Each structure stands twice: as structure tokens, then as C-alpha cells.
Image (cartoon, rainbow, N blue to C red; front, side, top):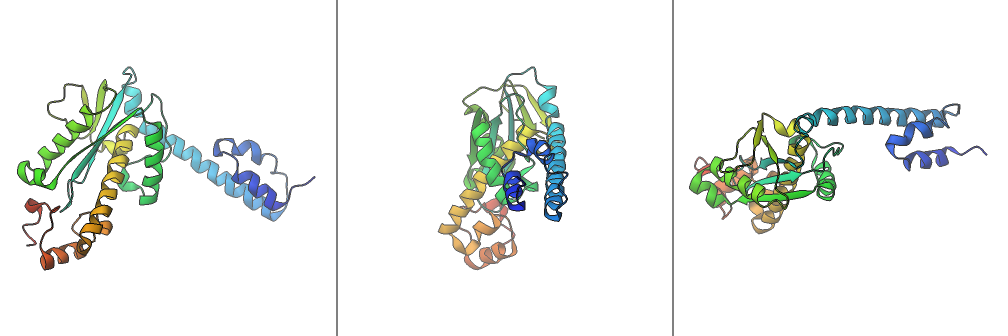
Length: 252
């Protein structure tokens, strides 16, 4: 019995993308315009899936290069530039050979995609650790040193000790584990990119909570960065407890 177009649509919607070509084969001879349209649509989806697989393989270059190590940690930071809020770092260890589609530098992803990937990474990772330093520490020792301290916390609190660390461009002081600094590492390593996403979502969620305490600065919208509304509020109301005094001298 010939399936209706709605029935075919439901079959395709419920088929995993990696299996879609096999299922499409059942409908390629169907000459109905609606079926032809569905076949074209899912062919395009499959081609995008193949493109994404290829991209992810490229992002596994460093993981493959150092595959003799059992536990590879990726580490990244978020929040070096904002006028307010903590700097947040994350260290992630993924299972060997793990491929999480659509993982990328967190800045290249939408907020909804980061939230979606956050849950997947947290589920699949062997270990995840967050480190952070307060605005007060940033003012006391400067943003770079505060970032290093947060990264040290991230590494030291991992429940599995990594054999090697892939870093986004830096070498963390006082860490005896071998480190590989990679320029733009969050766009070149799936492990660093995963850490970037976890750190970004963690910090963004914190800034949304701070917005409830200090709504005049629009922290939910700007995440502590120097938006026009944020700077106007700084000039009007002065700083709040989570502002970095060393960052706002030009505005107050």
C-alpha cells in the first residue's frame, strides 16, 4: 500500500540522519511532487551532515596527533574583556575518539545551540571542571594572572588527571602536565571548543542571575561587556559590586 505524503514525512522525521539515504531509497521512484520535495529536502540535510562530519574530523587534528595519551584535556576561558563579572575557565576531558557534531568556538554558535551542546558535552565528557576568579581578584592581580589562576583551578579539580593539556594560545604557569598552546585553539580542537562552550554557558547563566540583582546594567543582555546601555548605566548609577574597577576608570 502506497504511503501518504504525511506518512512519508513522519518516517523521514523519525529517521536518524546517518540512516536517511537508505530510507530515501524507498521513495526515490515516487513521482508525486510532495514526495520529490521531501526527498530533495532530506538529501540536502544529509549533505550538510556529511559536511559537518568532515569539519569535525578537522577539529580532531590535535586529538589524533596526541592519541597516544589516554586523557587529553582541553581548556579555555570566557570573560577576559567584560567590565563586570568573573573570568570563567573550563577544562574538559572527552572519551577517546569522541565526535560531537556542531561543537565549535562558542563565539561562532548561537545561544540556543550552546545550551543544546552544553547538555550533550556534560553527558558525554569523562570529566569537566570549572574555575573562576572574581572581579576583586581581577582588580588585585590583573586579568591575565586571574585567568591563569582560574585555569589552574580547572585543571587541578578534574576528577581524572589529564596526560596532556590542549590550551587556547596560552601556557598555564605552575602546571606540571605537558601543555600544547594552540593559536585559535577553540576553532581547531574539539576538546578546547567543548571547554569553550561549557565556560561560556556557565558564565552567561551567572550574568543572567546578576541581572536580577542589578537590573539597571542589563547584564542579561550584555553579559558584562561594555554595551551602550551598560556604559550609560555606569555613568548614571556608578558601579555595582561585580564591576571590575580597573576596567571602568574611563566611564566613572
